[in-house]
Length: 323
Image 1 (spheres, rainbow, N blue to C red):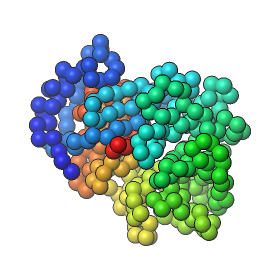
Image 2 (cartoon, rainbow, N blue to C red):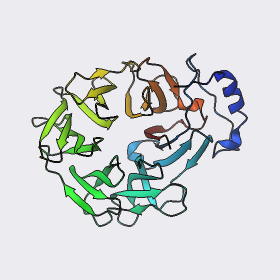
Image 3 (cartoon, rainbow, N blue to C red):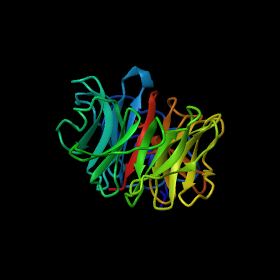
Image 4 (cartoon, one colour):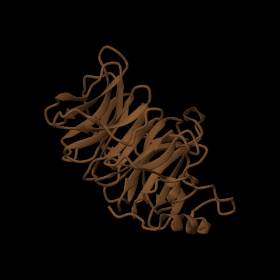
């Protein structure tokens, strides 16, 4: 991991690069919050995320930020879609899938969009009668896993349904493929109550196993890192990010968590760095976007890269592509 060697000078220069922000050139530049003495990581990929004032306000917007150019774009500005959120990059970084409310049928659907085009996103589930959410690409980019009314389904990138999965949960959410494509990791409700566990479903033989299971505690938002590990959030007095293991090793709470703040929506950037949302003190809104080092516990506000990323709203659902 390489780090910026002149972080303070970068912050001063950044305040003059308003034209690179991608929006808000005529607004006063927000104050950049104090940072850790360790310079923030140098990144060259891109990030997609959404921002809303509150979940029930139905005012979510989707943003793209390019670390290499410092350009921040409102992707959803001219879309005929309400409340776009929870985007996921294709493996080659050229497309995103996300959930949003179709203005034609006023229902939650799954959309796919090719970055850099002026076309409207394509509605992949426009003929569905259910509530379609939580889409994720497979690691080879050929399939999309998602849920319809709590039931897990798989389709190709044209919207053709390939499979419906039978799992021992009346509600299954937030599915994510394993790297080999042979299994799905998801958050499923426990049989005796409404709390959720992290579960792995084997596509080949239909078996399931619990990967993280604490009684009366919600475990959700699993994101596969590699063949050995995955990230997820565990909700106790606050949401905390854990590193889980497919071999059954006990999950560990990562060192950047703070017990008086929520840490959630974690997504891997590289072997050390994680993109996440948090309510930690010193932020702009209720949830702000941060980078965190899962080894050292260091954290950096995304406003250190561009002062318009975090706002008075909630910034959530961050996803990173190195391409």
